[in-house]
Length: 271
Image 1 (cartoon, helix red, strand yellow):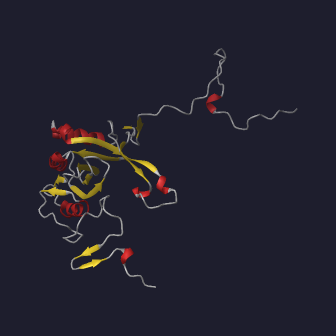
Image 2 (image 1 turned 90 degrees about the vertical axis):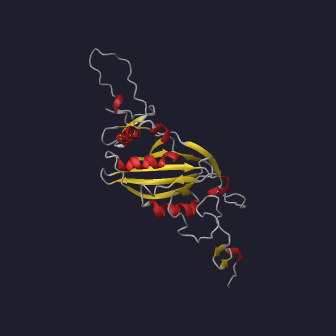
Image 3 (image 1 turned 135 degrees about the horizontal axis):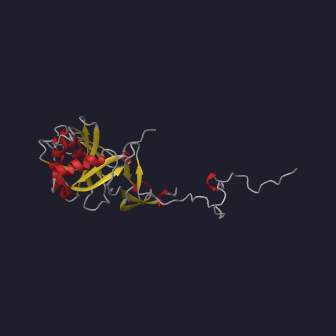
């Protein structure tokens, strides 16, 4: 006895196997489609529903490698085009302890919550509250003092410069830690280039003293109420703020008190 070889070598999907009992319909069974609808919610390890990814907020378009133009580049990188995006706001439920944290803060702030919190972002498993700068001190004090929140420690202040984020070019980012509840939270505040003022959190978190000085030194953010807002790394008479995106990348004079070091292309060459 011989058998013809099947025309297909792959095994049929398990779902397509006909397991109907006697008397059931003889209509063919369709295998399930592999391209299902995108789910708005997923479940974390605890079985709690988490909101899906929020749409990105497009703030600009970057052309070329590192945004550099006019270099005579022949590698092809000069023709790269990509959008500059920030994570968009996330709708509840947020998942994990995030929902309870936000609900507690909302109850503690009352009517001020809607005015203070600009948007809530859950991105890569981390929670960020975007707070309007005029409400920063009140929100930080509530996060520190409320027994159900108890974010006692500010781990640092980071500066970010987004030249394409119109009227929000400068960002200050605070990493908060609750030792009591073993939780972490990020608070982000923005200010325009034309008015780079953000209230200091020194009165709430004294550990921000040197961090705010460093952010001022490198980004030019003015922290109102800081007891001694002076440069911490660069010389006092240094012009500009070196970590801003509009700061020259190279070929600029390096200046110190009483001395000047020329840029690399003007220095003496030794052979």
